Length: 227
Image (cartoon, rainbow, N blue to C red; front, top):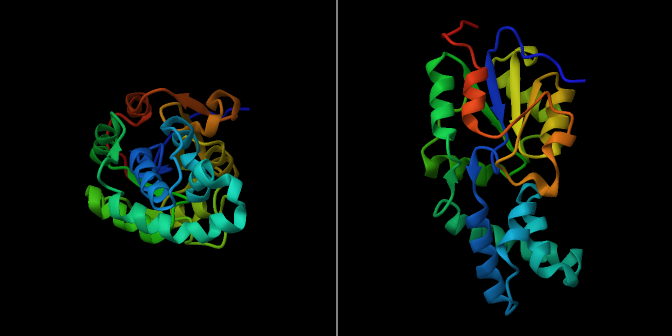
């Protein structure tokens, strides 16, 4: 059963890829580069975009699944190196995200990121797009021994940002985001503008499903709040 919006919101935590940033074009570009090195025809963009939220192995599987999982593991370091070369070339915030983050900060709220992306890539990407230092907490896929849908990374982000989970929103484009946020006690928001992993956000039992960042701005307090 969906819960009501917290009466006094302190902050918002976000998934990164597919929620704040459209990073699929660069992830696909790296796959194209690796396919060229491996003399393999690259897959179409659409199926790669859909699985981006599952991580680098899922992207590699789109091109090299027939080689088996051991081969994917062997290809992974090179793929990550290629992605690191290009990861901020075409990656951009989704339409409305810049305004959303500005609104969160203007209203005295705190925001953070909980991603399954590797920490070294997360930190460098945030630096390249100019977001380093803005987020009150960044928890990556290798910060803890567990990842989303485990709630531990979400709870750690709340702790680092000084947020009460019961007064915080968690926003994501994947069912794992909703599961992690709900298990951690946050109000969960599924968004339809991301990658979705082929799923239907309306079927994830999120507390809210939004089609545009402006709808989230409308849910925030109208005036700055104190902790």
